[in-house]
Length: 156
Image 1 (cartoon, rainbow, N blue to C red):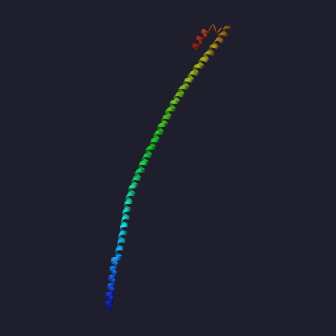
Image 2 (image 1 turned 180 degrees about the vertical axis):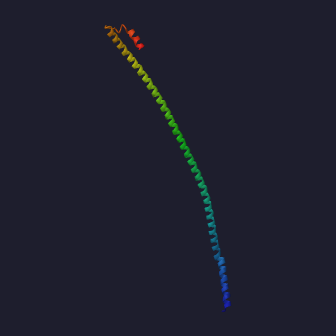
Image 3 (image 1 turned 30 degrees about the vertical axis):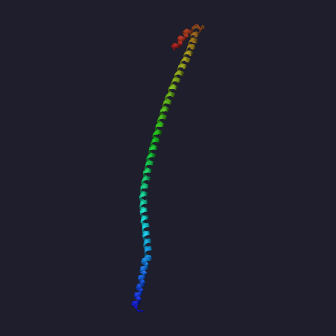
């Protein structure tokens, strides 16, 4: 066999190999590559979609956190206002109670003062009678002179 015959046979075998590869081997390989490219594209689009959903979720979380912070600040301010109001009410009640106690003490002191004056008048009247008795060197009858002693008490 000569080189030309060998070359022709080799070309025929090569063409059969190319045809066989193009007919039976190449289509599954291209289909697998296309499927893989499609899956990669879907994965990338899903990742982009997940990124955008994550950004939206982060915005919602930030909004909810901001709302929660605002709510907490409002509740804290309300609690402080309520505490201040309760303190003011307690001060007012304590002031009123103090004023009542002072008024009661003043009234009691006035009553004690009146009682002390009455007791002092009684003692002065008794002393006056004893002094008059001593001056007159005779006995003064308290029953007989009761009217005179009562006038003396009122004058004192």
